[in-house]
Image (spheres, rainbow, N blue to C red):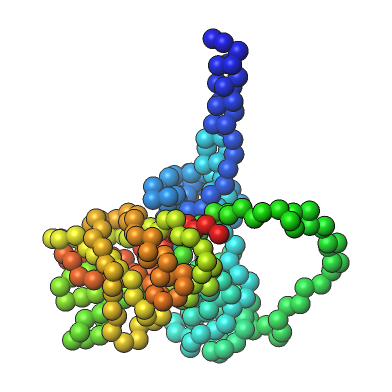
Length: 301
């Protein structure tokens, strides 16, 4: 073997052992082996846990120590939010500061009131309201010195970003009964929709170039023709949905690749979410269940 080949092989071996970090969705915990089952890029991997254990449905950080994946813990959730309804059964809806709606429990000494700004604790499975906050926090402490900008005159190179947007709500609509179930159906007399609470158009710049968009669906039932997926203009379950630009996708569970044009419409706010527009007879899990409705978008800016 020549010296050049030896160096190339050594470099490849080093690269294969490099650590890296990504995100996934926790789909289960095995407390016997203290491991987590995590959906990473559409495949479920069983891996050891480190740090705080996640709960099913949590977005988690996954580190690769060489070739060994490790669930480092749940992605941090915001410490504050706003109560968005009346309590029921010991739980209440909160619009957290990350733009996601959660249904959480609360301490017995606190009665949630819609509009209250509240402190949230996530070490309790499902989340917990600690109480109302008296005022918004104000950052304190020394100010970091400014760093001279040596690149002011340098050309700006585009950067690539990606994010998985989890739906805040979902449902199926039938002309004779309106919105009647949280599951998302695709059938002759049903269309369904996932809603994202304004996360997408507020996160992706209008001038960004969408490179890829994929939708994760968890199938409950499938029969007949392939389901169709398109985009809709509704922010919530208000009125009849109109799903347009639909394309056929495969049935069953998994990531479904969608046209990048969907991302263009979603990032500039002309469309608000994705949904079904008839096709076959299919039932998909509702928002916040089995990762269904998770929308992965990659863009360049």
